[in-house]
Image 1: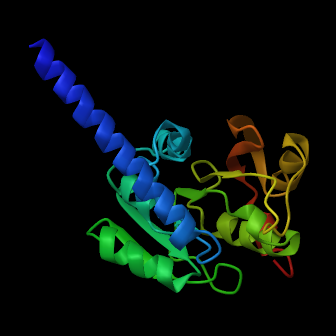
Image 2 (image 1 turned 180 degrees about the vertical axis):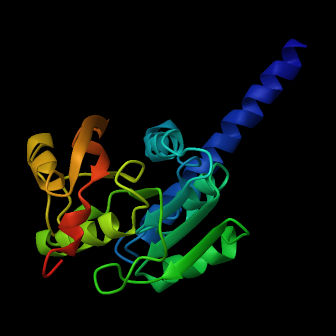
Length: 228
């Protein structure tokens, strides 16, 4: 029995080391500098240091109610879109990167999960939704572009009582177009579009702090302002 446990421990340790090696190869040879989105299948292979990225799976799924229609904006590889489809009536993933959408369709397209190649800045949302998710993406747009997107989000939410937005943003990335210095600044920005906002933080790495937000009671009139 003791020998079996040691053998199992040895195999498990080897499997984790192989997984970490595969994830590191993906980071260095494929992801870094070559594609603006991440294939989240490699998160669990990389080990506990990368598992914090699953927070968005937990927070997103927690806010999905029975019968909800979900829009996953800037969905990237579609990994989390697929997870949400297991709890909702229908999930639509949108992203402006055609390669990301191609992978999402290949891996996760299904009866309750659909993907569209679309730029939310210049194109419309698809249908009406109860929940919109927007993970680590708002910082990749200018402030003016983010305002346009928020207007479209508010317009596509099902109602002022039930419609809600949940998402996150981070700092310290030179590729970002607009970062929020703190929760107060983020809250003021989102407050132009929603009456009820909750924001909290999570420290992933020494230099990476995530700011999460849940926005409720959308201001529908804001979406109809000229230029929005």
